[in-house]
Length: 210
Image (tube, rainbow, N blue to C red):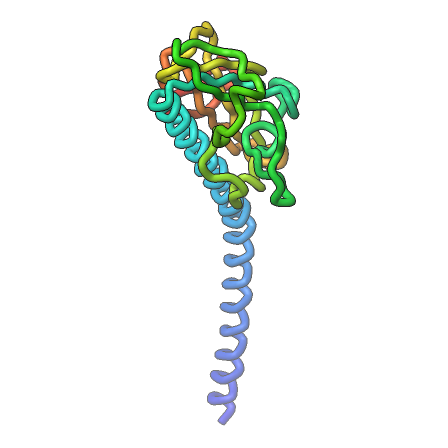
């Protein structure tokens, strides 16, 4: 009887020890895995929004070629040049409350000569709005910040520019300050109409291809 009781007590004690070991292991894994999981989620949001921008610029370029339209970007209308801020201050016209911004960040109008023109109210009248993105107000847009390397840029059909410098749009997580391992992505539009995305290199100041 004493032997059986000893075995029973020993079994209960061993199970408790096992439980403590499991709790310790889970705590260690959680302490390591949770921040990594959050970082992966945040990076995924940045990457998806970068794809939205790249896709939107491809669509804009194609539309310019089809409609023989020229566009002028004035990206410092609501956000200071090279300053990060929410997408609705730089790229998106849809505001957080659902309203549409009247910002003149993107003005496009038709020109039969295929050259940049001054888009006057008469030329803009009745024209459907051109956009940087085909998707606005997404979940990703609430989790990222954007910036541009140039305050102004011009495009003429078929989506090319006479300007020497490329236009680069940067995308980072709004949690970047707390997560230094998060990467800043970039979308670059060159004068010959080429568009590519990559990772922004702070040391060189270039958009490295993905």
